Length: 282
Image (cartoon, rainbow, N blue to C red):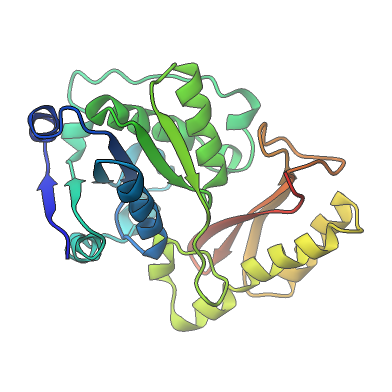
């Protein structure tokens, strides 16, 4: 069992970092809580690569474009802390909304161009404005050397990497592989909202992606997309989008290229799930 320190204010977290970890290399794992094994792989990597690991737990209201989604987002701080204790020594930063966004807070604006208008940017208006502001704010507070993000949120990772470059921030963004359950389902905090039967129904997501990778060997992009749509049409899930994109620009591809990525979002009941898979070697 590790030692867990929990801080809820900016002043308290900055104080301990300034005095107890002044010359330490800090790793940051930003989360919205409802932690799972996927998060733990990020935490473990940070512990291995840094002197000090901070896990932020903050459900960021400004990245939700759906009030009920924000209200229903799973929260269980006690369970989160227990899971983190099993990993090793970790500092937890669990601020309130007023700590992250005080009265004098000045929002930052990053022009994402087409990157912010496709996929999640298209279906969740304002989402990436919220992501950019909360991640930049966490970086300002903690000043990490490394920040760890899961590849399940493929577009979010691309946006954060772009933001870091545009703002000339002095840290490294580390993308970590998707952690999947034995069933193939990508680990997600939202999985906690699924019933047992829905957990089985949701497997069509990873199955469709695996089939897309096989089909990409000898089929066109459009043929792969149409096949995926048929797979979802025969399931109980409602497909929101299935796109094959350039891994850097996130623009739709017409022809295959190295690193081509399939990205999708589908609803299982009222729960919105997203996943992705690289179809061509980088």
